[in-house]
Image (cartoon, rainbow, N blue to C red):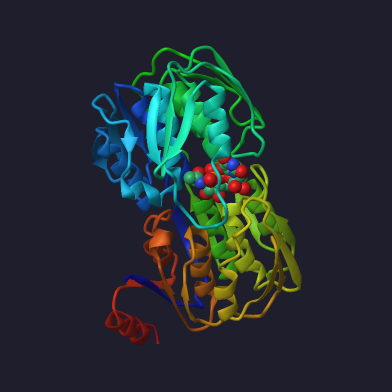
Amino acid sequence: MEQYAIKGGNPLVGEVEIGGAKNAALAILAASIMTDETVLIENVPDVRDTNAMMQAMESIGAIIERIDRHTVKITGKAIKDLAIEDDFIKKIRASYYLLGALLGKYNKAQVTLPGGCNIGLRPIDQHIKGFRALGAEIRIEHGLIIAEAEQLKGGHIYMDVVSVGATIDVMLAAAMAEGQTIIENAAKEPHVVDVANFLNCMGASIKGAGTDVIRIKGVPKLHGTEYAIIPDQIEAGTFMFAAAVTKGDVTVKNVIPKHLESISAKLTEIGCEVEESDDAVRVVAAKPLTHTHVKTLPYPGFPTDMQPQITVALGLSKGTSIVTESIFENRFKYVDELTRMGASIKVEGNTAIIDGVSKYTGASISAPDLRAGAALVIAGLAAEGTTVIDDIKFIERGYEDFDLKLQSLGAQIEKVSSERELRKFRLKTG
Ligand code: UD1
């Protein structure tokens, strides 16, 4: 089993290139099979989740050609099978995008119930409500969701909760439905906009993505296109917090600074300097960090996917901070691990009360999920001594070359797969 071995204490300094947005890529890959023509997608991050999605697509007959590490050509013409039962798909929650894409194109789809990060109850009732509003019949049998329609017809959907997944899924299903669909209380995340832009490049007619009302005029057919995925807001934010926590000076490049505003604002509040340019953001942490309060919210609020990273930073900030998680109820599981590193955090329901400590100390810990795993890596980078992190497969779901990118900023981190390699790391790093 692979682990990350980290010797903390080095400030991160330098520049790092941010890859394509994983969560946009998952939906765009699924959407690409909605045409029989070939689609070229650039800036696809090479991470476990996107690879799992492409394997699931291949399992139903999509032809996927890798042009280079981040560019793929996809042809959905040969799709024969509308049932995705692949065990692999259970691992990624975003398998539900194949439901929307197949239902939208073929009026029928059958997909294994989604898995993904275990961060709380993650229902898909809003997806189902949306599909039903478009005229589909939905059944759940033997762990599969089966969606069918004679012909999807545009509908009016008011989402009861702001859901990224449901907004995108309904957009996919509605792109070729007869007539107009209106989604109210839609999610406004950058990747919702990216998927709408992609579908529009394929000939769809989607207006309002990025606001809370999205209007979709169904078109009879979608066509091939070339498209580059937006940069990953959460990968960028993770490196920005890594700079803060290690008292470093990091420029994250190839980003859209507007997408990072809530993250930049919190970093400024806790005492970092944040400089924005056209497609880069520099974070300098020259002063001691100070406390703040933060509540996770749908975009443009502070992202739930950055909650563990900011908690790690606040754990080292002077004073008492409060972090409120308002999106997923079970997202503080990593706090036990952080406590083993010396953090002083009390969790009550969806709130963490954090008393800043002056340092973390290295420990053997496990990554409980993707973002918490990344946050624990950051904690290890700031800690005194060596930290060993298990279950890094979670981190690899969403971060490409995380260890190598951190190394390029001066971090002492290595992937090790045996006791012997770990001993070597300890000897080398002292
Ligand atoms: C997506 C992201 C995930 C991020 C989350 C919130 C992907 C693959 N994952 O997840 O990284 O943390 O957005 O920004 O893009 N809900 C319902 N019913 C539904 C759907 C959602 O009640 O049918 C609830 C959820 O339980 C949660 C909230 O709505 O409390 C937001 O979830 P949602 O935005 O759908 O998250 P995901 O799309 O699963």
